[in-house]
Structures are given as C-alpha cells and as structure tokens.
Image (tube, rainbow, N blue to C red; front, top):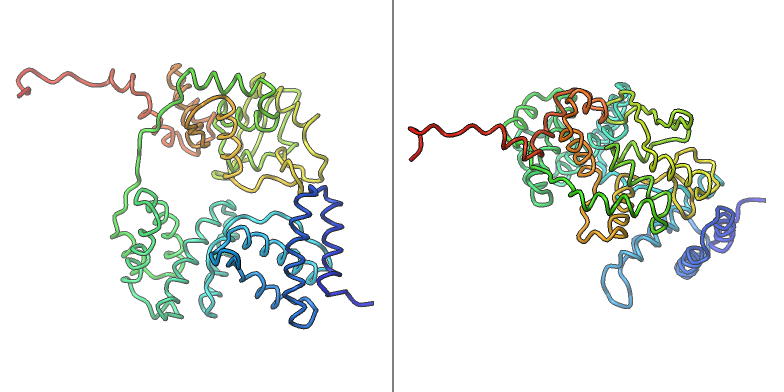
Length: 403
C-alpha cells in the first residue's frame, strides 16, 4: 500500500510522533489548528498534499482578520510544511529544530549556485569551524544575490563598483560598528574567486574595528546573580549556563556545544576543543557551578538521546539552537536575580571574567589560557576595561606644557 498523502493521513502520523517525542498538548493543539487550515486549503485543490502546494500555503502570511503580515502565522505554516515535506521525502517525521533565518537568501543563477557550493566545499576542506563557515557563507551568498538583483548572473560581468554598492546596501541595515565584521568575513571569499580587483575595492572601504570600553558588572550585581543561581528561583540548567558564562568566560558557542563526555566529574573540570580557535581548553568547575551542573544532569535534564549537556526543556529535547538561546537564559537569570535593565550577553560576561582576573593581578598569559585565546595578544583588549589601573598609567603634564 502506498503512502497516504492526504492532509489527514500525514497529520495523523505527525501528531503521533509529536506525542511520542513528549511535546506539550498546547503545542500539539497549535499544530492541529494549522492542519485544519492546510486541509481547507488543499481540499480546494484536489485533496492530496504536495511540496508545491505546501509552498503556496506557507506563503500565505497575511492574516485575513487584520489584513496585515502575521509573524505567528508564518511560523506556524512554515513549521507544519517543513514537517510534512520531510515525511513525503523520507518517510520519517523530522522534528529537528531549525535555526532562525536559514542562512539568508541564496543565489539562483547556475554559475552563482556553483560558485557558492565551491566556496562551501573549500571551507570544509580547510576544516574551518562551523560558525566561521556560516558567517563567511552568508556574506558571500548575500553578495551574489545582490548581483542578481541588478541583472548580473556571472562574476565576470561585475566590477569593483559592485563591492561598494553591496556595502552601501548593507549599511542601511547594519550598524557601522558591525560593518567591520562584514568586511572581514567577505574578504576570504573574494580572495577565493581570484578577483584581485574586488579584493582591492574592499580594502579601500577602510572600515575600522570598534573597540568600545565594555563595563564590568558591579560587585553588588555579581553577588545578586550568584545568590539567585544558588537558590531555587533559577532552574539548575539556567543556573549552570549562567555560572559557566559568568565564572569561566566560556563562549556561547562552546556552552551550546558542551557534551556530557566533556565533563570530568572526578576532577571537577571540563575539557573541550574550542569551536572558534580549534584549540583544546580545560577549565576547573567552581563548587557552586559543579553542584548546579550535577543537579541538572541527575534530576532536571530530560531523557534524550542527544548527548549535549544543555538541551531544550520542552520537546524536542535537543541541544540549544544557538548563542541567542544562551543569551535568553542569562538575561532571564539576571531578571530573576532582581537586576533591572539586565545586560547579560556572554560577550559582556566573558569580558567581566577577564577583567576580574586582571584586577586581582593575574598575569595576561594566564588569563589568555583561561579564556582559550589563540594568541596572548587577543587578551590585551581587556586592559581597556580596568579604568583604575589605566589611570595609574597616566603621566603628569609637564609644567611648561600647560596652557
């Protein structure tokens, strides 16, 4: 007997998988509500589901009630169509969590599709970190889509002016301080194409990296957060994530990627290979952090085949999606600690951990080792946050030089 491709037939399989995976009934109810809308849409077009009909259904993002775009409608429709398509293609219901944004727009012309694929293959061959490949790939594809929007379908048809045009378009959506990262991520791709004129055009832009002085957390705020993590007000998972960022300065990508096998409970340490640098790093676990981590793994962590330490608290119980998940956890923890207007991104907490070490006269090479920097020079940026020690370095103005 062939596969039942009616909406009702596929939906029955999907709902059964959702329940088996432990989804909340409220979430399943939202799926079923979307299934009814899809069934009504498909019934008018023959009664059988297909990916092309799914794409048409997914594009209906305007609410008939308000006449305006509905983000919730887009999310619900896209989610259901993705699950239905996975079932048609593989016979399996894929409930994996997809990252937001999907990596940006993608080129459509044959040459640009092949060029983007060749760039991805080259980065993979050089074993670049996944996060690096994503960043490099996104800006490269964005440039190719930009060219297509201006009628260009072959790289040989463009010139150096297109680089300035692309960056000018990005400047309407990006803060100027962020354009440095765009330029840095763009340059390797242009070098890969062999177009020296495009590389030269990018170098002429002259975007400089911003080095703002990042403030430290006050002693009072830090103590409030630690007290909250030690209490029952914060879940063991969220406490462990926050303490990892606060006390070790671990990057968000490494917190997300942490696996159960990386924790050495006997020696109270974690050992990882950093995603950004590819270098090994071993960090001690302070007592409170080790205790909360153990509480989470033994008592709170859902049963799942995923071996990442931190997983979603609701189904599907898989690893956290990305750094934004860690940011939400730390901000929520700061709020529960009573911190008003919490600024708790892992970048700030990483700087805070480094600055605390610096203020206690820990040598820069040691701080570099703790933070897992590829070079000790990377640690020099933390000198700028220690205002008191910077003031000590100021020399008096000679009498004759005063106005």
